[in-house]
Length: 156
Image (cartoon, rainbow, N blue to C red):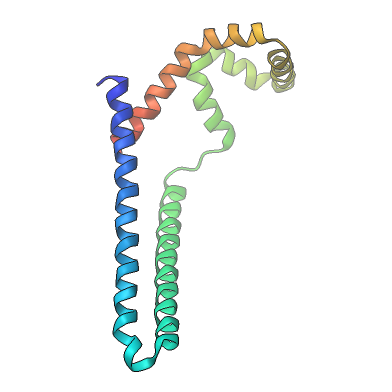
């Protein structure tokens, strides 16, 4: 699958999700309007508007609570499944890029690593030529990571 088709698949999925939300919103609006027209003659427009508005607010509250409960439940299962420190996550991401030896050296010398990263940031901010050189050197890695992100998006 080419990059163009992967991007098209991700964009079309995104547009489909927005279209579904738009259709759901239109359905809710028409349902509220129908309920208003149904109860307006016997109760009056003011009371009907209060009832319909209160019903919509209750609907929003229920959907929000359901979303929070689902998010909490999924967070709980993820927390039980994997307990990793931020250092181990960073190490897992760095090891494939810079290798085992450089990762071990960075863990053994955190002060020098921090000063080196800070000075590299200053040099990159000050020198457009150095930025271009670093970007050209990192372009294959950036491309690979972008392809992995697109693959993750299309796999879900």
